[in-house]
Structure formats: structure tokens, C-alpha cells
Image (tube, rainbow, N blue to C red):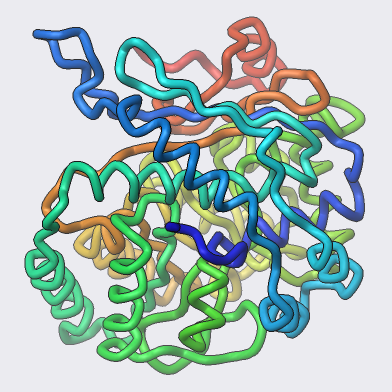
Length: 412
């Protein structure tokens, strides 16, 4: 059994789920799975990774996942987080994932199709553990004797790079649950990072000041290892607001205002790439610049993004040194160091590293995602600054969304 706790997921799933409970309890959602690196073998026409061969095993793991419920100690931990409300914890005490809302289909091509459909409140927690299941099932079948020594050596190199002279203020966080090699390897990585980089401890969701390891997005390991849990919102939240808000053009503004209504200034990091950076900046006006603590980058050129954010704050008469820029798009340690050196002293900085921390043993990682594609029966979409990250099965809606938000067609 791969997933043994419903806390083995990212914090932002709980922070979004609380908003759903309080503001959108009747919303319906539909999610789709996608492997961004299928690698079709030209000789056979089959997917080189042949995830379909493991479909039954994945189904069995999902069945086990749906048998879990929150333990008293887990609920007590969630209740201890200042931004989690007691009625939400009470709801989680009754919560279980329901297998009827998810299907796994083996396709003739060798790929798999995973579809999740049902009440948003009852399907939101599927994404992260299901992706972790797909990863671990795949790697335990294809790498039966994994080279853990190589992984440890690679991790040692990363730690050495982070501990170089002049980088003592550079802090990283683990964002790697969904694409980890395995749950055991994930825990080992976190224990090593904690021991060798030091952790900055502070209450709630704010990274501490001591040490270079700021925390983890994984709630179970945050509880188990005494780390700071980190996270605010994900793309699905802003996508859902396309269907839930009063007007499509105002959906991004509506999402940020609904978030502020829920958290009253807490968890104040805005995600910037659901409609691309230009559309984000048009909506992220003086009010939001002052209200939110910062923004998170997840697509497009991170250096250009950081410069545009700093310029935007200055234009809105906000000191960027009081705001936090979080970088979290496919980071490596060298890229993290480059970003730190460009922006240090000009703003507060945070770096969330995923696959490069939790799935770097020398094997090509799976670039897999599960994204919301419909809410309340209406198509929803993400139009990021990295076109390959876009995901929508309704081309007419994509064209309409581009028109409404004045987003140009990507270069071909």
C-alpha cells in the first residue's frame, strides 16, 4: 500500500478545500490525467513507458486509498494550523475518498486515461496521491533494484552547492510529492535535507529564519518530521472560478477576492500563470499588491517574470523588498542559485523544488499531471506562459478565453 495517510498530500489541497466547503460546496468538477512525456516508440507505435501495463496495480492502490480516513492525531495537527478552521476539521473527520468518482482505463497505445468526476468537495483530494501512486507503481516495476546510492550522491552534490559561500540566506522547500520516486525515498530526502541544511521553524505557514530548508508542501511529512507545511492555492482554484464567478473576465479578480474573504490576509501568495503574466498584472492592481504577500511563478521565463513583478510593485508604489516572490517551475539547484543571485536584496525570495529533489536517481521522471478540465459542466482552462502546460479539451473555449483576456496565440 503506497498511500497510508490522507495527509500524504500537498497543503494547498486543504487550503483550497476549505474555500470549497465554505464558498462552493455544491460545485461539480472534472479532472483529466496527462503524461507530458509519453515517448511513443516508432517501431511499435506504443507508449515507451507502457503505463497501461500497470493499470490494474494502479486501480488496486486507488482502492486502498479510498479506504483511508483521517486519524485523530492527523485532525489534531490540522486543527493546530492557524488558518484551518474548526468546522473544516470536523468535516474531514467524516471524509473518505469515494472510488466511484475515479476511473482508470488502459489504452491500446500503452498509455492510461484517468478521469475524476464528481462534487469538487469530494474529488479535490484525489490528484496528489493518485499521481504519487502512478509514479511509484511505474518505478517499482521498471526499476526493481533502484540505484539509491546514485540518488544519495546526487543529493549530496545539491547540498554542497546550496552550502557554498554567500548562499546562507538561500532557502529551499520541497514541492515534490506528486512526482516522487517513492514515498520511502521522499522521506529519506527530507530527513537528509533537514539534518544537513537545517530547518527554520516558525508557527503556521511562514518559513523560519534559521537554516536553509524552509519546509515541505507535504502535510504528512511536515507533521511527522516537525517541518513547516507550505502552500496556498493551485491552478484548479483559479480555473474553477471561470465557471463559478459572476463574469469570465473578472474570474481571476473573483478568485483572489474569494481567497481574501476566506483567509483575511493569511496565505497571501497569488498564483500568476493561469492566464499568463500580462493578464495577471492587469488584474493584480494596487489593492492586491498591498493585500497579498507576494506571488508564485510556475511557467515562462522566471528571470523575466521576477523583473516584471518587481517593476509592477514599483509602479504601484509598493516596496518590492516587502513582498515575496516564490519560484517553483521545474527548478534545479543551479537554476535556483542563479535566481537567488539575480533577485537577492530586491525582494523576499522562496524556492519550491519538486522532481529534482524527490525523483533524481538517474532515471527519466514521469512528467504527469491531473488538471481540472470542467467545473459545473463548463470547460475551464489554464493558459500559461509555457504553452505545453496548457490543458483543455475544448478548442472553442480556449479561443474564447484568449479573446476575453486578450491573450495572443502562442508562436508555432
